[in-house]
Length: 266
Image 1 (tube, rainbow, N blue to C red):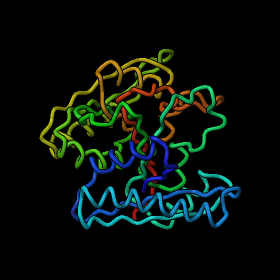
Image 2: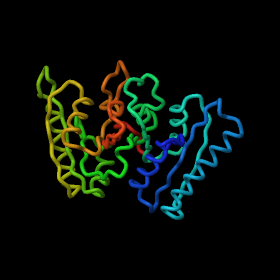
Image 3: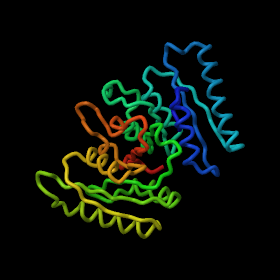
Image 4: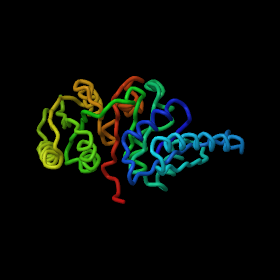
C-alpha cells in the first residue's frame, strides 16, 4: 500500500514499490487521503484522474499487474491511512519523504513507527536518494530475543538481493554488556541466517545508550542500504518525537524498514 499526495514523493514510492514487488501474485494499492477542505466533487474527480494516471504508468511497466486505487476522507492523514491498512492488511506500506523534517517532528503527517505499531504492517520509509539504489547491505539491531518478525522480512529480501547482513547489539556505556539473553539472541539469529540464506552475515557489539542513534551511526559507517528496526528501536528522542527517518537527509540512500515485533499472525 502506497499513500500518495501526487508530489515528487509519489513517483519515489511507486518506483521503489516496482523495484521490490514480485510481479507474480502481488497487488499495489494506491491510497490518497482527501482532507475535509478538499472534499468537493471537483477535488474527488481530480484525485481519481491522478490515481488512474499512476495506475496506467504501472500497467505500462507490468501489463495486467493488479493496481487498486482508494480515496478516503479524513481530518488526519495518519489516522486515515491506519484505518485503510486495517481493512486491506497489506504486507508492506511504503512512505516516501522528500525532505528532512527534523525540526518539525511534532507536526509530522505520518509517523512511520506509529504506523507500523498500529497497523501491524511492515512500513518502509524512503528518501529520493534511495531510488535506483540496489540493496546490498542490511543492518538489524538484535536485543534480548531472536527478532522473528524481522527475520520473516529479512530472509526473502536477503536471498533475493544477495545482501550482506550486519547483526548489531548494543552494550550500555554505564553498565557494560552483561545481558546473557542478548548474547543468546545474537548467536541464535546468526545461526538461523547462516542456515537459511546464502549470504555474508556479520555481527557487531557496540556501546551506547540509545539503540536508534547507535544503529543509525553504524548503518552510516558500513554504508548500509536498509536499516531494519522495531518501532521502539527507531526513536532517537521520545521528547521531541524524533525518529531515525527524521535524521536522514533528502539524498540519503538509507531505507528504514519498521517491523512490529508483536504483530498478530494473519
